[in-house]
Structure formats: C-alpha cells, structure tokens
Image (cartoon, rainbow, N blue to C red):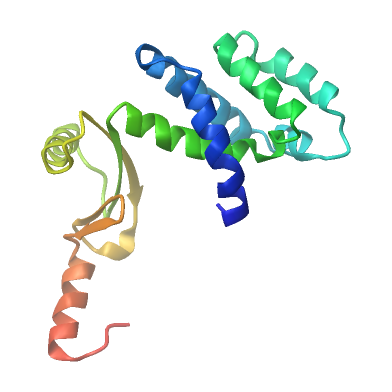
Length: 183
C-alpha cells in the first residue's frame, strides 16, 4: 500500500471501526471479509468502482444491488459515504487497514507461516497455542504459505518479528558463521 493510499485509508478505516460497537466486531470482521473477497474476486467490480468517469450515483446503485443483502446496514451506509466523497476507488486500501484495526481491537493476531510442507491439524493447533502464549493474543489467524525452497522447517512472521526454524535459514546462519556466501 502506497503512503498516499495509507494516508487516505487510515482515517476512513478508523471511522469505519467506530461505526461498530465492541459487541459487533464479529459482524464488522465478517463484512470486511465479504467485501474484500468480492473486490479481490472481481476485477470488473474493482475497475468499475475505481473508474473516475463513472458517476457516484451509478456506483451507489451497484453497491446496493450487490451488498444490501450481504452486509450490515452500517457497512452499506459506509460504502455509500465513500461513493459520495469520491473515495470508493480506495476501497481496497481502506479494507486492508480496517481488517488490521478490527483484528487489533478484537485481540486477533495475524501470523504468516511459510513452510516447506503442509501442517497437520494437530501441528497447527500446537503452533497456534504457542503463538497465543508468545503474543498474548486471544486468537491467532494463521496465513500458511508453502515454499519448497525452505527444504524443511518453517518461518513464522508475527508483525515485524521473524522466527526462522527452516533448514534454509539454518544453512544461511551456518554460512555466515563460516564466512561463506550461500547462493
């Protein structure tokens, strides 16, 4: 996300979060995922909403048709406000920032795990429990990515902290101790 998009997205994401009380964070998160899926799954929708030549009234009609039965009325009102203010083109950035803020408010930590192979359910549960203890979060949302270059093991990223227990990482560390370069 560019710094311009972040400057625009931050206040709208905060305002979006304020629409929902603490008790309805789950509704907000569900709506955010619904909107994010729709935007990411349809390039036509994304192009339509970001096209400055299309009138905001036409965008509002489309948004009402697509989302009126799928999201909370507060979410729909927020989308219409974005249309009125000419900011619906930044919806993707606003959604990303809103999800981040909603997760933080709900004490949900997003953890990216890059692994050489898939985890079993019990391995995932063990990792989640250890990450809950480590982060103090009440919930952990794992985003698992596969990377065969790791050879074995995995890399965990929690915010800006990275825990590398992969074979590739261990080889890189050994290489740096020996003064060699690893290609």
